[in-house]
Image (tube, rainbow, N blue to C red; front, side, top):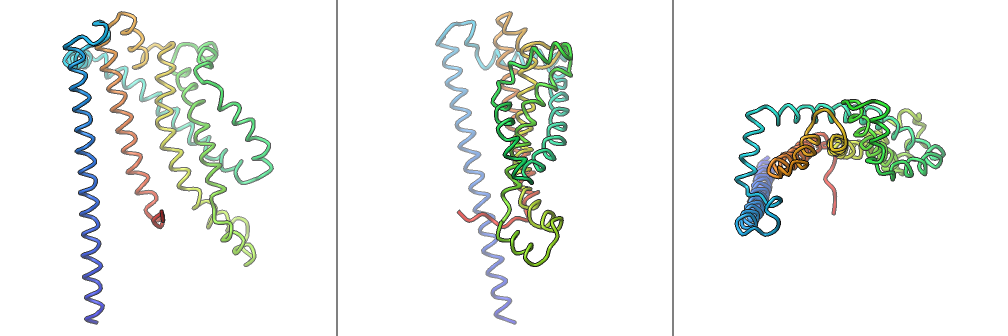
Length: 277
């Protein structure tokens, strides 16, 4: 009993040291990231002060902050930000709901995969921005066209990842269950689908970013509202401070979404054994 208690205390101490080490590692990374951002801002300020480039293009961080504040107080920024996020969310949901089952189905049958993979790869290689005029003609200059373009970009990410997940299962485990008389449905739910979860989660994370990218791309061409349309109008009037403010907001948004995706992925995949490198 004493030996067991000693082992438990040692295991607890080891786990505590490991968690503390992870926290210190994350803090160190965060500090380096902050330092990198500060250096970039410093270089940016120097470029504006000494006019490294055309004055109309090089605006100071102060100008960008003032433009951000003006757009925020007038409501222009947040109304268009909400319009872009709403369209991206709709495209995201549609891409996951449609793309995941399609990818799982294609990955389940080798013959179906061989038939459709070349077609999917060819369509996926098509520059989506070239389809924007087509969607505008079909749906008009409205949110539906933005959602359609974003969906066409994001759904293939989900299909490809879901399909890859279906072939990630341990084939030895599949053969063992089959030899032991397990039904195909049991093999599917006990081995194949659990093995596909990491690819599905990774696909969903990428789909978030591609949905936002597709919406902004559509808005840059033609839209009634959205951050992309604000960028188009501001760049047309050479209001580069406003353009940079929106670009920084988009970068921050993408970073936050990626961080949330990392957290969600770790929680959803907590049941998995750690990877051996």
